[in-house]
Length: 286
Image (cartoon, rainbow, N blue to C red; front, side, top):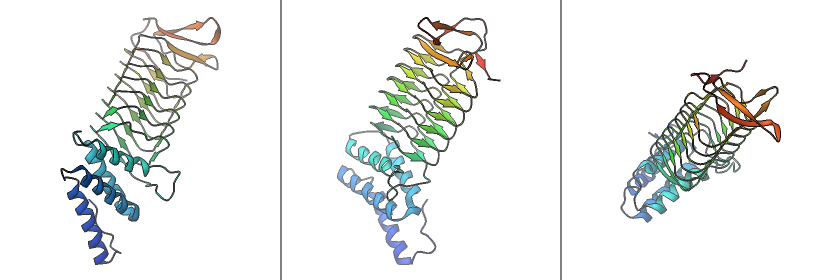
């Protein structure tokens, strides 16, 4: 809940409070142009008054968490305002220090490429329509995509995840691209249904990578991935090929119970195959 700064004059604080409250009222107006105008009023207030920014972001996220109806232009405006102010390349319009709560939101063609979110990010149970783009995004807090549904491709190449990441139970109907992403903590993909191609090539995971009970229905690529905290593949299913590569004298991903069939044309790469020799498919590197 936003409250005026103690140093602000009574008249100025009252005017800001009136504009803020008026914008909130117009967000409930049945006319889409009124709601779009309300969002722009909130954006202007946030740009002029940094102390309001998290409250305004919370309001916009709350709007996007409402059931989607025939309000496409309004939701597009809400998404554009969020993504526009999370671009650190523009110092004048970047809103630092905010967090996002989009639990259960319906998001269309969300593009957070190059964005930075300093606080936590919550997309649990969110529904992504159209491609979801997080290319090069820097997410500083804990990141939650539990049970999220991606109906199209998910592009997360070169994203930097500063906190723990949870995709547990998510469904990705399109391809999932995590190439060269950096996970500074644990990365949990337990029970994820990868219905398209999944690419983790070149990613760097500091904490444990949990792929237990995950289903890879097409190809899975881990070539060049650095898994510093080990990996868990208990109950993991690869219907298509799962490509791995050598790291020094060992395979970068080959827990107990699995073996690698070496590529006849390149001894540095191979395909991960379940051998059934161990019920526990976890590994922690020495």
